[in-house]
Length: 112
Image (cartoon, rainbow, N blue to C red; front, side, top):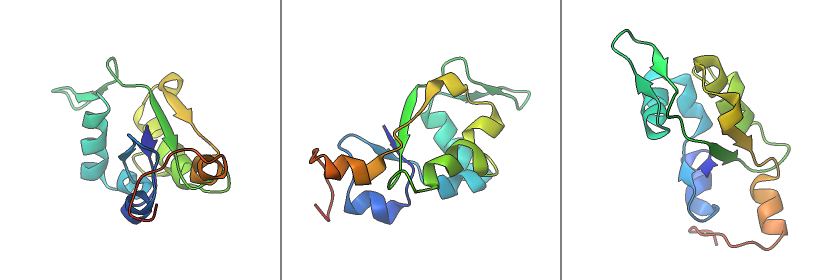
């Protein structure tokens, strides 16, 4: 489970077990590549990315109206889709934290 929100939002309130990969990191090549490594993507010697062991992710942000997950998936300079991440391995929990908390589901964080 990937929280695509900025670190402050993630620290304040998050889905248990989620990891923070801020959408804004996907505008910086080094930051994006560190996340790609965490997702099982390997850079070959020729510089191309190998997605054969890419993990299936479920990403979320603040709610259906929030653009942070779409930024990570397709709008950022080094977004998942632009870099070749398999679309079949990308899932979007569109309701985000708004729906999660509205349903009374468990959350963790300093703002709990």
